[in-house]
Length: 114
Length: 111
Image (tube, rainbow over all chains, first blue to last red; front, side, top):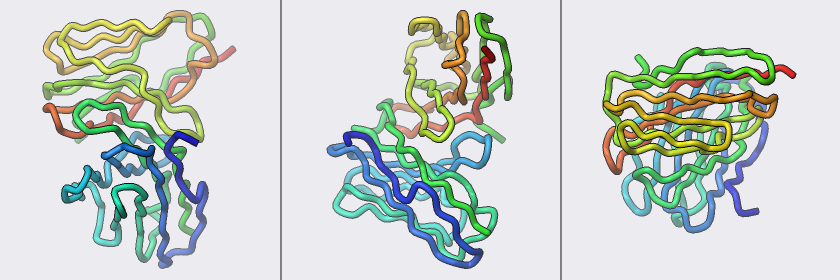
């Protein structure tokens, strides 16, 4: 499809395990964002990639969270030693550029940490 | 403390009623966006406003950007069940900066 895709759609894991969440942005979009959305809440910014520039990691809540974007396309968000408070929907978005561009969101990955 | 506040937090109305939801800040924004998010999906952009006092209409939806560019409102006329969802505003302080999202207004339109 032409939209942003994310996998898996749902992930259930045990406390202390590591998880990897994948995002495939729209082809040609240079900007990629990760957000976290807790139940019934708004979007919490996590990390932003723009082209070949160093990513803006200012929203990552702890050093257990990290993200990579390989080849300027696919991105992986990794959460190490998951905690119950990490349970949320993780949304990825891409845009043609930053500065006022429309962000196109994927459907999200619902992470549940038992 | 949220950079953007949205009110009300929750709103439940009957089909056919009109409603207004608000997005407020003490900061000035170069541009502001409204998104709608339906259950199980990602947010979808409704509109971008960039000029103080700007009014944009999208069918039954009317968006206004405050003169001082610190606030915005979304008015829906004759609400329909299909309008149900989470309405998020997002603002960029300066050109080139990322957008910051508000906590959203959860709207439920009952048939």
